[in-house]
Length: 281
Image (cartoon, rainbow, N blue to C red):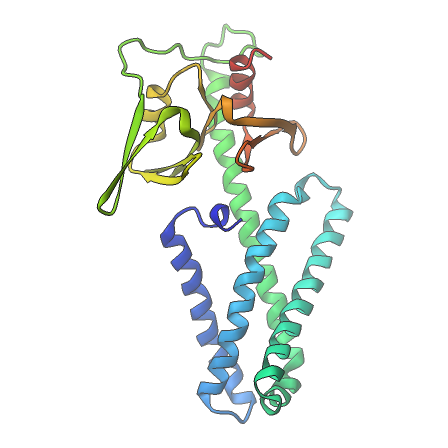
């Protein structure tokens, strides 16, 4: 779960930095309300920031794999409301429980701040869920960008016929990929690759032996990986068809792949046409 939540190491530090900043702001907001030293208030804020950060990862997992977008509006509202109540109870319960374990007197000092704690927890929940929704929206926009060329190129084709680019015989087909990590150079054999995922100017290469980061474009890999074995199912993802475990419906007419390593990947409509052709479906 953590591997999918954090696509790259610097995003881990970004996430940690957000909660450190939150702890500082929370300290100055709460300090005037209690008769404790600034250090004690910061320690309390830091503990809550840790809990918020961990709960944020759990929320991301629930929202991502709960397929909330495919539910009726009423059911979706109920689910989000239930998650909000659970987030507040979990955060407040863990926070006060930890304080009582450390110092009961300090915990009693913070007890009158219960309404403030609840209000802040609700705000944090809203911020987290909205952020996750924006991430999902970005993925949908990328899918639409991938679908557009399929609808405009070769207008004389049947709309149901997938657009397939024939492999260029002049281009070298990769047999292995060298990735430098620090002072080490890893050699990845092509059959070991499960899928590749774009991340800005880099590409994450997921293999049977782990994940590697390569400074290269998706277009390059699309053109140089074995044509019969790899398919670009999404603007940001190329999959080894031999690593696909299951294909299932995801949100209306969209498809989702489950790979042999357990990862799940959304498939655009154009990508699904290419995939069906590769698999002779």
